Amino acid sequence: MPRLLAAALAATLLALLPPVPTVHPNDNRVPAGRLRTGVLTIRLVVRMARWYPEASDGPWTDVAAFAEEGHAPEVPGPLIRVPAGTTIALTVRNALADSTIFVHGFATKPAAANDSVAVPPGETRTIRFAAGQPGTYLYYATAGTVNYDLREREQLTGALVVDEVGARTDDRIFVLNIWGEPKDSVTYPNALAINGRTWPYTERITATVGDSLHWRVINGTTRNHPMHLHGFYFRVDSHGTFLRDSVYPPGAGPLVVTEDMSVAETMRMAWQPNRPGNWLFHCHITFHVIPDARLVPSPAGAHDGHDVDARRHMAGLVLGISVSPGKAWVEPVRTAPRQMHLFVNEGRRHGRAPRALAFVLQQGGAPPAVDSVEIPSSVLLLTRDEPTDITVVNRLAEATAIHWHGIELESYSDGVAGWSGAAARLAPVIAARDSFTARLTLPRAGTFMYRDRGARAGPPVRSAHRSRVRGWLGRAGRPAASRHERRQPVGPPGARVRGAASAAVREHRPRAAGHFGGPP
Image 1 (tube, rainbow, N blue to C red):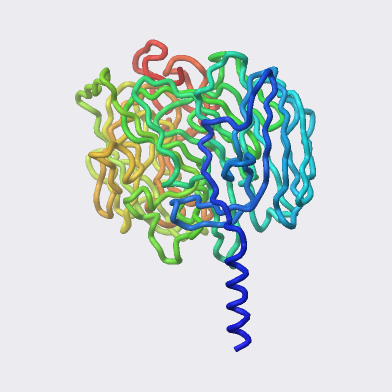
Image 2 (spheres, rainbow, N blue to C red):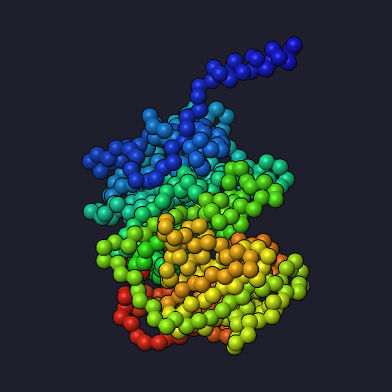
């Protein structure tokens, strides 16, 4: 009887508590505060709120979150965006019951060192500073003491942007946030979000062939994130930190397919899609995009990573992009494509690896032996502008999919099962004992990588510590450096990849600069 009475009393007291507000996923389109006569006035508060990083009725966690006074809490925090020359006058109120918060990033840019303002529970602090140099920055707060070796609390981060006077402000801003908490020794529920949502609930970006897209990406987490764009190069216009921004001269930034963003770093990028279909922009660290990157990780023995549904075999830091063809789009004509056959084989174990898996290119008229492997996988040598059909034959007992990293190709051949292509025709997985033909016509010379995209289990032939089978599009015996950030200098599509050890795609004939798109 006493236990029942105690439970009833606890339920009654819980019902009397004020409701926890719900976090609003912030798409960073509307700046906070009030800007008048060169002064932005903004009142911020940090309070507990309930965050639904997936569906609005899905899993949730209670977190400390920033809010503008009188508005819903937001992850990421409210957007602070002002023209150069503005003075920012803000207050920060700590509505947490038991933790002092330490606020960072509110200082004139560039800043010499990391500032910190402590706000005890129930108290308010006023901060006033000149915005300073134009650029992309961030602000953040920590609540209490956090052991980042065990858990993550990076939802208390927001964008701070200083624009050139008179500059356009219709670019998009994407902030990365992470929350994580170990449940037991093997389960780690976490939310890896872009603008407050995790895939497949992140915003779908829509564009039309020929559009100029300008983005700002902000790493508000304590992890590195190599951010990778499928199918296109983008130009990096600036790369900085929350203290200072480094801006390239107009049009002179490097062309990349992946830009590594370290802790609290920022990037401004521009690109122009010249082919229709579905594409991805995502973190290239496997553990940040697999099904376990959820508040409720996949149970042991689940096979979400093998699912043909892109909503199930990915999670975390992924943005989906759908590019419509537009009225001027004309499908390129491909005549007499060169034919190649690439086999996904499993052979005898090598070293510590539990399985020996490799891509083996057919040489001559006979397919390679079923159990043959090459270390590393076969190098494929293609010729620039020559249509090439590569038929991938899957000899494994499980499905797979092949992504052609850093290659400008049709969406359907890009290798993301259930996503690549378009709504009426989405790419499948390559089922066991089945095949798939990727259609490539490479517009630029360089060295590239191809790899499986996680539809199978087990590490590759070369190492027990990796989780992918990889091969190189390059000159036999001279693979490129093993970095996944493939930078390319500004110039015609035929320019060589910076730092590449060999040319992957041979020059065929010169092409006018800009013919194959790239950043505007």
